[in-house]
Image (cartoon, protein in one colour):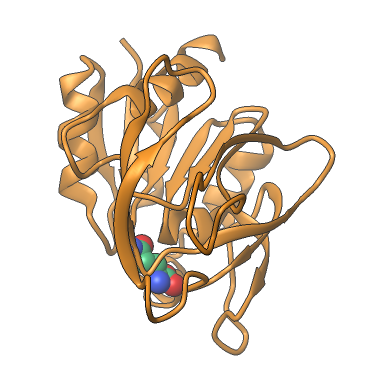
Length: 197
Ligand code: GLN
């Protein structure tokens, strides 16, 4: 079974570790370079992307993670993790850094005050039945490059049509939190990417 790390500087690390463990992979927290070297794939959790970026800097993990992504390590970001994997941010904090890798532009806190946090059923490419998706001060994907596959769009309401899940090669990201709510199928899609490497 592959070993999958969860970047463990900030955010909902435990929920990801639990979901991955349910799928029978070895799931480990990653806080240092030696731990990063031991994983076959990396999850970047939900949390707060500006704080996470600062802590990744403090832990000297920016360049090592970027390098592994460049070398083809699969990575999966949820919410703040999606922001971390994006090449470009709108409404980021001044000078906010990302790891990058995904050729997307994300808009931070995109859903606005009225629908700040919400949940709903979402059709995701590759899954037979909708996922119950939980959005918490979530970003959406404003623009995608040519190699990016859209996995899900919001189905209804003011934000209908907005892109909330993407894949590019072995990188995946969701605006919502599949680590919360007990449905491990989105993680399974990622585990399949890791196994395919
Ligand atoms: N709004 C947060 C950010 O900008 C993301 C929220 C989340 O991960 N639930 O990082």
